[in-house]
Image 1 (cartoon, rainbow, N blue to C red):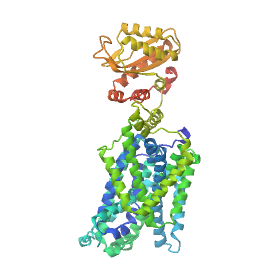
Image 2: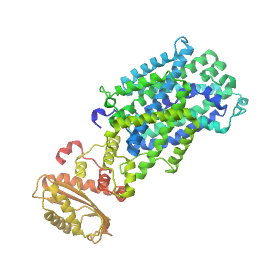
Image 3: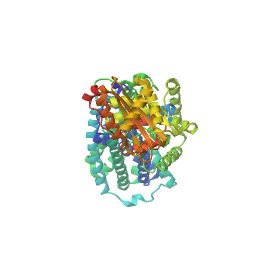
Image 4: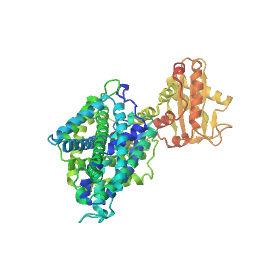
Length: 629
């Protein structure tokens, strides 16, 4: 990815929390309660709780992959690197559709509120299109400006929600919870309803899609998203519980403003106004956050050349993805003409399909053995929990019925056509290739993917390449699978280094032998760093990495059971400073806590390089690089 395509890291922990909360709290609680209550009755509180629980366990896989690959596009990016470009393109379209529909759902709620409460003569779609344009302007200003607005609105919204729960809770009648289910309904219907209202939690996809713009994503993404999901689930359940107890069933069923209606019954016009303002804030925060997140999917697709290149472009010093925002805004505006229940049903289905793809991606990339997959958050109970999530969401999708599945299938067909138009021209490596390839060849590897993930992790951690990295990239790697003596190993290393150094291999071997006889280069049990200075040469620097499968016995007095790791270092006199720094860095890497395990798991030459390239170590300061290179 070029520098001018990178998005600015302007979002902190509070931004992640507020964007996630704002993306979830909206029409799901201010508009849907009357509809879902009419489907099952008082047990709908359980449906909200089950939906929140499903979202939480599904999000754990999302968080693991987001901390390993905090890039624009979120689940699309994960799926492409794990399952391949066709699955990734499908994930990108599904996530874009889900997040756009979630935003459109919130904007529809705002438009409905404005039309019914203030200007009934104006059609709802007119307000919807106007609000979409307003949110577009906010996002076109900058991501940071949109995030600041989001924080202010979310804090006010949370205060109003708590105010409502407190006041409505004082007017509850427990008899309104009997019976828990409407006539003809079963507990199975309450479970099904958790799938219908799953769109209420779908805003999290938009948050993951802006992970590239989050500062310190290792910490801020998991903390912000888990905290927001727990808070929102509790608010949903408490709000639905007190609403059910505070209003007669015939007043709740089918109501489009249930919370404002409860407030008006018990607290008059003032209560109605406060809750109407709360609903308005909820719709605005979700519409804003959804538009912001959804626009990142076309960016990611275009970056990987699976869509028109124009959508990868960002403009102004603030790096705003203007074409992607305009496309997303157009789709959101068009959705304002659809039926509200169709929007909810389809959005819930595609959100759950996205979670299925993410959990499948997690299973594949973990089992593939890709070395540079380095999440800071790990999904617990692996692999049981991801498998359970896949089965759970498939069952919930099936329970939603044929209509939503048919529309979702249409989106998948569109994704396949988009892939055929753009994706077939692009060759990309992915984890599934390595997993399948290893069934036939144990040392099969996907080096391009390893390098890409290395750069992603470095961007995440703020690590810059230095001269030692460049030397490692060019280092020959020897995997010695047969028994050899120390001298035979020196000959192999000399032959590997000689072409790049422009020297005779026999001369290099003799220098290594002489250096080892002078003093042992064994620095730890099983590890040696043979190194020599090339006094008659200039501007020479070479590293050779060696793994000895069977170990080398009788290396010397410091042998201690056999050498299985050797790092050879050759440097001319004018590169002495770089030579000494490299010795220190190699020793630091080898003494690291995870070196032995990662070195043992590595199977291919590129993976052996990656063990050193991705190790935690002291970096060469920028001012010192010219003298070290």
